[in-house]
Image 1 (cartoon, rainbow, N blue to C red):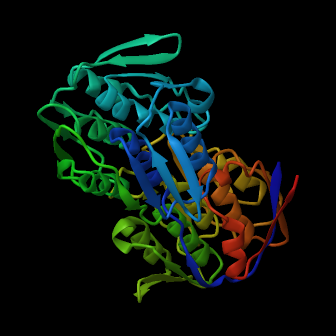
Image 2: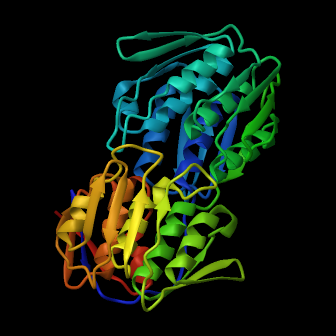
Length: 417
């Protein structure tokens, strides 16, 4: 098991290219189950979660070949309808095989994903939507068993704008008979990316990116050849790092339209934001202003940037109120930031962050993916040395993060624990 050693206090400078988005790549991989034949997905990040998804596809009978940032998935010989617990428990997104398997084959058996470090995130809305489309669903010894002769179009209202639920139901609806309308649908850019890929396969979808998505089912789909969108959360992580270190960092592949809430807050903090030749630049301020944030579904402030922004606010001039309104139990990074000298207190779903003059390096432990990123950012800005253990969390969502930070001038290395 590896750990990161960071000698902080350096201003970051230069350009970095972000990888493909994990949260877009995973549903694209599972969408290959909707059509027989050879699919190709490019700009694929090499991450633990991607490897898990590829293993699951192989378990179902797909032929999977990865090379040079792309993957070929041949799905003509799918011979299993079961997503086993051993794979689903390591990656919640595995539940996204449910909609495609049910739509194409009429049956699926998928392990319940259970809880996770940042909250329960139940799949009841996925199941409720599939039942509205005519599926018979039973829970049996920790598995969801679903059957349908052919799914039927339906009008489905989602109680909350769940990203995974929107993706699962949108994929299922592409092969359903009739029209499916998803109301209060998630609006994240990754939803739009999936819709574009499905349209390229022959699906009929309107409204992706709005809260109402209409899908007219077709008889069959064709294999995809698609490039994954850039990772907006990775891009945001580098931009916050620039602000924390009073540096100047350009992110190639960062799309300002996907990060309007974050960029607005960075400008409030005192950073300068500019776009030059398809590169998004942030220049950090000499003095960081404290600002308040509240996480919300897109286009609000993303929950996946909350931990990184809290690390920034730990160095703010004044007091910041950070409210987590998307996931419960997503403040586990607070204790580790406190070990580095941050002044943070929690009451309910709100953290009060009183800015300090500087952070101090310390041994800390990552608890989840985005918490890992916040500790890296804190270490980059801190005096002395920070050691971050359990960085396997980081490897779930960031490709070669330490190498990219080194290219910007950071003193960071991965060593065996």
